[in-house]
Amino acid sequence: MTPAHDLRASATRPTVVTVREALAQLHDGKLRQASEPSISAEWSDHHKHVLLDSVLRGWPIGTLLVAREADGSRVLLDGQRRLAALEEFVRGDLLLDGKLTPPVRELRESDGKTYHALPQGLRTTIDDYPLVLLELNELPPAELRTAVLRLNPHGGLTEAGRMLVESGSFGEQVRVLVAAAADWGMGEERIGFGNVGLAYEDVISRVLVAVEAGSVQAAAVGSEQLNNRLRSADAVADHTRDEVADALKGLLSLPALDMPAVRFTKPTLLTWTLVMVHARRAFGAGAEHHLGYLLEWLEPERRKLAAELGPGAAPPLRSAFRELPYAALLERFNEVAAVGANTPEATVLRDAIGWLFLVATGGAPSRRVSPVPDVLRMYAALTSAGDAPFTEDRIDQVLWEDGALKSWGEWR
Image (tube, rainbow, N blue to C red; front, side, top):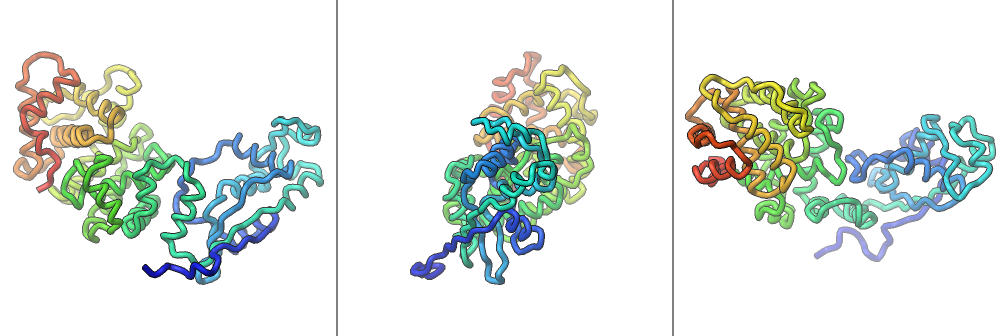
């Protein structure tokens, strides 16, 4: 195999700049932050304070990794949080914690001060602090990502997450879709969780694999289809990518998500994205309205139930579904979204319950279109199961023994 670059020439060139120079380069565009969402979590103020303390003491804070691209531009790949914390302090938006140990009199006397309120000597210490930049010259994107990943081997990624980072065309396809989804509103404030540990990439990669396979079970962690895709690193078909992108954009654009009580977890975002894809495929783009109508009730009630806040509002069921045991189903949905949420059984059961609620609240304009006949079969099984309470085991038993779940989620 021909190497991507000449291995006889070093891809790395160290340079030293001061904090003042690095921040100036960020300001004038000579150095820019990477556009992709960070793998690591946002830093706490304490983490930032510790960094500033180390700088003021002249202690090392590690090297920064910079990629020099073919057009000469320089992109900061590793060290974004460190440089951002320094910029925040110099800007005056972060106070100094001068009480960190070991105690130093000058720092204690400046406790609680902004950068501009510091004595000139301490400001100069920050401004002139040397930062070591390791510049990588014109490496292909796949090699850059691998280099960064190896710098942070314990960055909170699962093995599947590590495989996704290095999964070639498929990984790049996922990253592009995540970046687009950020423009559609996929962020912690709107959906309920951030991209720590590549959470967004994880969900979207599993949706892509499931939609291409035509199987909800394929979205389970460790599924054969998912593992094969990560190993092959081949992108999914363009029409699959476009179908998922349209569904995800539709979901993120729902007015229901403007409600503070409508927020997702990774498992529920996976479920509702798959439901959206399938509903749009079955009924057209109008399915978005019905799913939004359902989420306005279901997500707030699901969260109340999880917090043990007691019974809430009844769902807006159609008259033909007034006997739906909605409280028991909602409780079971919560359970399989929290415990063993990534197993094939939990992934399928959440999808089936989501469809039960969607159809029961008027989200199916036709009873003949798949998967509505199977939904009606599940409803019939639930309502003819007798008067005994619907415990966790009983719901599963009724739905599996009836047979509706045995082939559920195999899209036809």
